[in-house]
Figure (cartoon, protein in one colour):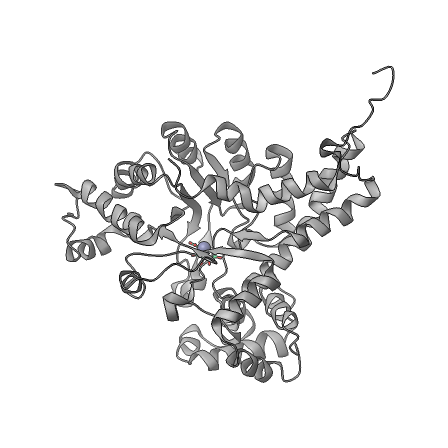
Length: 429
Ligand code: FIX
Ligand code: ZN
């Protein structure tokens, strides 16, 4: 024990916060910091109808469709035979009128309506439809991003999507509010269904990966990297994902995708843990979760040190292990509380263990938004949930003797919600 207590010197000379001032400082910094939303299914306006927005899209989000079938006798077949407006009407009546919108996803719609000052109960749907119909998309995006506290959304762009690829070939892109990501699911997970499309586009590939297939897949990735200028490549992977693996996916990942990422200087995002289509009748809502063997992540990070890996895993049971691997490999960047994890009770647990093990060297959240206005509630929830979590971490630090300043907190929040992504992604020599 020191003979006298150390004289606390606040780094950077800022005002040293008292323990009582810390929660308010945390909240103020989270509210004032613009975040980068590093994984969404949003699309910039040049991608036209790919971009979903407005109340009918908000209500027919697959999270709400899953909840509809628990509270309505409607069959999936009868529901999907309805048009978009009819589906939205049914979901509104079932989940918001006949029941209380107390789930995370239903409360989100309420938060969006409230964010725009719209009624959230009587006549809400009619007024909301009129409001969104009156909006111009470009200005609406600015308003939505302002309400959400973000200044950039990173998209998910599939070069083999027949609805999207022609738009890129006609020159889509270039909106500074959005960044592109080259999505690889059809190449890596559904090769047998999509190798023919590459042939039709002039790439000499074979289903069994014979001949110059690997080189031609690399050329395909180079061409689309040049076209899209992605900040990373990404793939969703099943809970059974293994690496190395003597499979089409294992070989294309090792011999085409990882070299293409190195050549482009961008990371690969691995999103692992999906049990696909456990209930196909409910379509996008039909996916579930499974615990993965993260040994695959260990071997990828270890065997390919020149590659960088963003990684989000879907099983709650895999989270602690992912933190441990992130302590072993600096080319591994954990991100987000993905999908079924994006609920306050789990976000709290995940973020606390990440701060405890990784400090500010991870990316706490992404929205995964599929409908533009969802970023409003997904980021409101993130700030609301993380305020007490970060307040506990920094209060413990102050109580243990660190002369904490608001500048410390500003630097760390900016690192977690912006700089970690910006430094880790994007072309790097
Ligand atoms: O693979 C993904 O990017 C997943 O996030 C989606 O497929 C999923 O449907 C989703 O939107 C989860 O939030
Ligand atoms: Zn996603």
